[in-house]
Amino acid sequence: MRMAVRRTGRGRALPTLLPRRARLRSLRIAPPGERRTLALGLVGLSGTAAVLLGEVGRVWRRGSAPLPAETDDVLEAAGEAARQTIAVARAGYREGSRREASVLNMLMSFVVGFGGVRAVAYMLRTRDSVGPFRDVVVGRRHIHHFVPGIVLAFAAGAASIISRDEGLDPWFAIPFGLGLGLTLDESALLLELDDVYWTEAGVISVQVGFAALSMMSALVLGLRLLARGERHVLERGSSPEGSPSPEGG
Image (cartoon, rainbow, N blue to C red):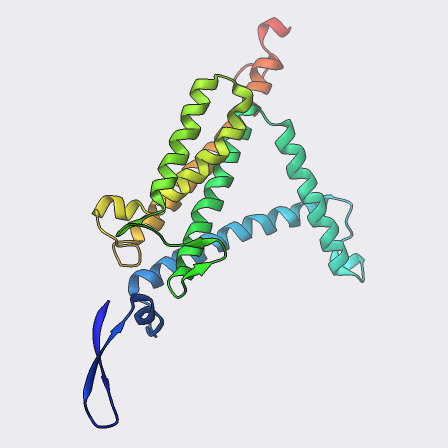
């Protein structure tokens, strides 16, 4: 809390206490760190939206939904294209390998954890709670969300190692990705050993999160590429250059 001065009608100054949240509500201009964080978030969301819309458009052109020029009810046709896109995604998920499913689950849960906790943290700046979410304080110590994130990721990784059942790996990947998202969202705090979440130094958390997202996305694409190559070279008996192998005649 900070001491402020309130003037009475007789001109006397009375000290008042302004809570931290009240001071934050009074801010009219977001600090540079927050503005940069929001800008990076908008860039990431725009890129994701572009990819999703591009896939919907691809399915729309190749699927059974009528094109906009061929129908009077564009909204109904768009809904049908969206449903077909979901069906394509579900079929691709089922047909993929367990390894691909694990990495994809980790990627999606990371996006949900990282983006969700950052959105909740932003809303908590001006209010005491957002639904079931609120600042956790034990004694005089604020428990940051990287703490449950580390616990969640470590627990999921340990459970996967102990179980030794590859069939459970796609399920363990979900809490692991969530924990990773919660932890990397406060990577700047861990590096600076200070609460720099909404400062210029705190932007590094968003940058680290986007870097991790890019690497996991590249890993998903790489696994798909390798799986396709294995089917072409190993299962179909083709040489690496694409010509039939000697054994295949």
